[in-house]
Image (cartoon, rainbow, N blue to C red; front, side):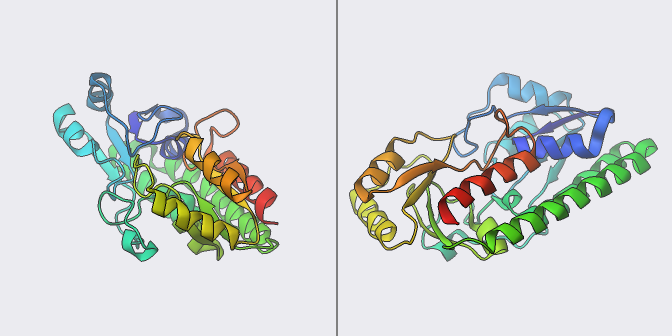
Length: 267
């Protein structure tokens, strides 16, 4: 069964549940940002061949709906954010999102359990002959997500500081789950250069934190983060919200990588 996923964590989830019964294509290339992604004619082609298209929704893949409509009527879309209590952009002082809500739900492993259930149900409906296979895979992978959640919880309890500065507003669900707080965000909106006034505010925040660290990300230029860090006497470390790159191909590897980076800064 041909499955297309918008971002790397969803492609991994599809492979975990579908095993050898599915062929998964990832739309967003590693290192690209979903907020600024521009689909190609090949993207439409990939979706048109698919039986199932898996996306986060909540405005993340703002380019996807027209594509699915253009591709084919026979594609089943799984919208992973449906039925999940979403964080509003305004709750964090600035709206970084296209739809007024924060789409980065996959950075909370407990919400990923709900995503796995949705994928399992969609696969079983499309391919009922393999219903028990998908169910078994989903249960096994859910146990791994639950173990990951316990692992992160235990580690975060040892952190000396619970506040941090990020490049873009991706870490609100993660922070909410583990009792952390994003003290400030460098990028005021996707792909938007921060104003001098905003940078001044970020510098003030960094100087007030116990840990002088700015978290940048591999999907964006580190130039601004490095300039801010230099000014504040802070170091730049890389947090990755999307993965798909070497050593971070699977979701579990990605989250363990992020945890190890946070430990360096916050323990």
